[in-house]
Image (cartoon, rainbow, N blue to C red):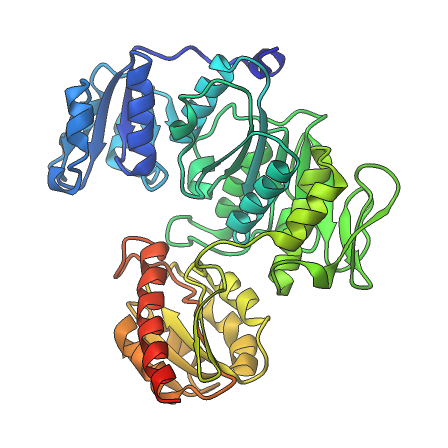
Length: 470
């Protein structure tokens, strides 16, 4: 049976869809819609020169409206829906214009899900993961469990490959999807069998009027679930634990036992989801170290148990998962100095959790980028314990220095190049040079991946020079 017939049957596709934003999601959706005979128009504020790949879709009949001239609203003419790429905010002029026309405004992910559910010959299973921190690692880790269990898996969404890119295959699969708050703002009927909320702490305060508005966007991952679905929530995080859901609540905790969930006690991960309490794995056997990764692992076990994954597949993934780039990733080492790329640490809470895994006073910390109105003073205790020097970069340097200045030595590096060279000069055996910026990357880079790759390239060059002097 098609999964959609057992849940909420998606609408058939309309005659024309306008797409706002021609990044990865917009491109993938435009191609998928044209494959299905839907007329497509695309608006993006960047100039046409930024998108040489648009020529192929233009040849397939896609109309483009590039630039900031205000012509983007022309893309709406004759359209039935407006599809949003994740980076397009809800207060964008094209969204306002669509709403004046009473036009549905839907996430790229929502439309791709409707296509997948309408066309598949069989039943998909859907896992959705969101949260402020840990969602990418948790998403990929769940997918790893399911692959080891022999399931066909598509890893999609905010983790890097748009859901629309998977629509050429029509066999049923397990879709394991990372969803950002931006994507969740405009999902409508998406109903995952398992949804995971890793945590909710302040982030993107430059986009949301307050923390509660941001938290409500995250909570939307549960909105369309049914009572027999599973909502996996972090019992140790107050806002995640309080999230509203119509589905079965499945808690996880690293602080102690939780009824009907997953927890860590006496150094052992335990689960009571699939029956009586069972021991899953010793916590120190996890492939990824740190308290934040223990939390991620607990969420993984909870989701996997809800999906009836075999215990041996769960244990194998927990002990062998390689992790993801730019998440506390060791990128260079020489003369006893380790260089770690945590460029994905784009908010204060992520940086704080990353620092928890390092010994006292041995971190040279690179902080800064574009401020998302983060609560930098909350970093004081952790930075004071773990760091012996902070190097600031980017637009937020002065703000960070005001918030943290005086607790440890600070230097204004300004750029990544200067920060890495300076770190190489002062680092001593046993130190870790850590890029965990607590900020967005968009003041100097296209994304956190580009920032992390730049840091890694510079770090390897400094480490190589250091190695030759041993």
